[in-house]
Image (cartoon, rainbow, N blue to C red; front, side):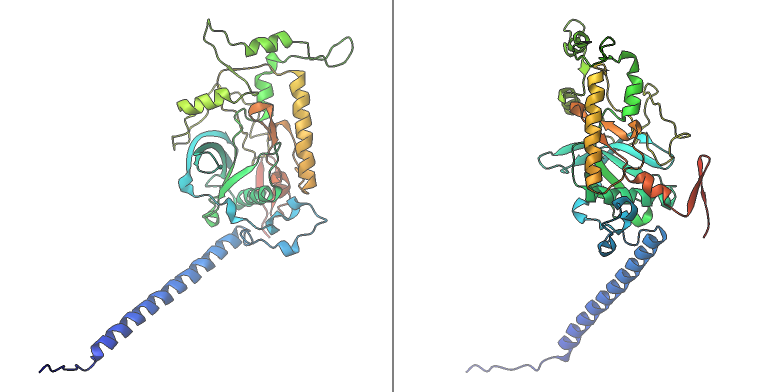
Length: 355
């Protein structure tokens, strides 16, 4: 005959379960307290930088009668633009100002259909004043608001995770011929004036034999011609690794890079974006100037339609990309900098005025 013996429930098991629950509860409380303190510290840092509304903005206070540049801090930041630092490999320096830097970089899976893309990354230097991090943050928000246009340097992404620690990376389109001012200065000797002096009209046949010859690559000397009208050379360099995009070290430009701009005479937040191309280019001609002027007008028209005032349109703020396309950059920066009431311009130095 089988006898089943019932054991009394042990209080030890209950104490054990209660102990686990209490430990989990304690961990949860500690985590919540930690997050609250961390959030408070983050808000404190953002407030000290004047970026307390960086993420959410305050769109309810936007005034449709005022330009976006005057109220960029009220715009929200859309996190769909957020990019992980791990997706970027920073390369050579393209330009540098007193407080800003632009570097060439390789981005992974940033553009749909491309495993790797060559981009430009804007950032402020570590010793930069909070004025400049605010200016870059405002430019980022303006670019988010703008949307895309072929004659405007378009936003591709941003790294804002450590913005409270003055670490803000704005990822934009790479324009390998650099700013138009330096490009025109560098190639001024080969300029072809297509204005007929007898009629005063533009004649595109003037200099056409020279332009056509530049496209004909001689097989005898094996020379190659770099031209803004084609991406063939650029893609070939990219495949061969000649773009040096794999390095993570920021390097300086060589002495052969011609630059007209000077930080002592330019606004000090300008980064003087220079070109990164080798070989010969076709001469600049009158047709190019007219083409670029038309594109710049289209870009400015688009900025105006989005209620964005550039504030400092100049050849140094126009970038030349492949296919002879020019793009307006640095819109909104001048407005942001000059409206900062805590600073005034004195000589070449920004002097702080305490409140």
